[in-house]
Length: 205
Image (cartoon, rainbow, N blue to C red):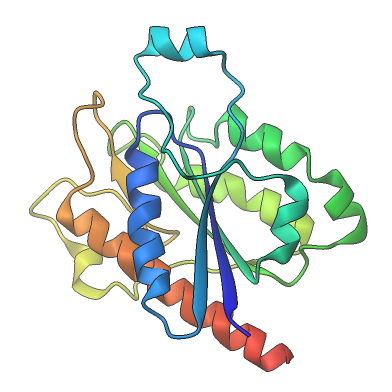
């Protein structure tokens, strides 16, 4: 049976969605892996989003319910930072997983994180670090990228998001889009994570 990878994300302006799509391509490059993109439900009103200038959500990417997480063999969570932490939309979704927590339905599943920040010092590491607590309480196995991306982790000639915790991008004022190097790390994370999830599923079989 295929290893099922779920990429669950929240994206306000599309930066995280772009990373998610590249991570999907990376994970799908691993033989025997099936990848699905999901969005967490929006908590802001349409009026509020319009005032913020937020574009429409990606068409064709459904909203996920907590119960659907159980079907995945591995989950990658993506989100923008809010003062160095995960946004309210994702926190609200994770807060709704208490029934899964009570039965430890997600325990032992590998999980990863990727994010977007407004600037280089905006939380590329702290956003992931503070989000790990959510995984820990569910008993999930955090899978960081580490330095497996190689030379790209040491790039000093350009502004770059991402960290050993996972792929990332820097949105700036919103006009900046993920760079080729950031997308390469996203692809790598998807492929690397899928390979580990596949091994774990095979070992448990």
